[in-house]
Length: 208
Image (cartoon, rainbow, N blue to C red):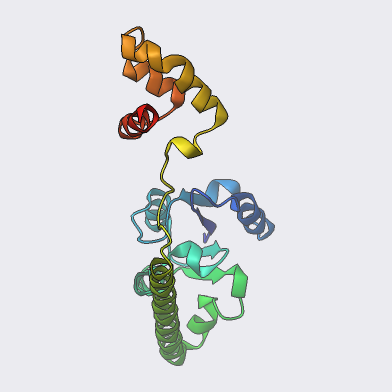
């Protein structure tokens, strides 16, 4: 008997898990057959995805919210799509664009459907690759402009001037104790919530 499954991938910053779960369950997918990974989509080394692959059988259907929930490397996405639909003979339905991403429609068309599916997936890969190149180009251009304007890239540097009032008060009250050996540097670092290198840099700045 064929089963319906759901696959959900959320990044650590993504809070859309419940929305995706609701969509799957609206389609009648039972909670125990919904696989959830909390990981990036850069590759397919995800425990729940790999488990899903192992339980799929011929005639099963996998629902996912959007194609990028499957993965972001589209060459690998295409390889996985073909593995599931052709080797395992299961089907994939992408809810975001069901009219295009429903492998059952291609299957029903026989050899012609397979040819159309290949062309469609190749076009998808090309478009995705071009989009990745555009994103990287925009990022490179943005970095170049920022550098030309003298802007600092990366995390802001912590120094004495941008410490909080509470941190400056702690330094004023405890600097003499630290210098006299009444408290250790580690204790003062913890009080200030600073890392070792930043702590000694700020202490030097304070003493100057």
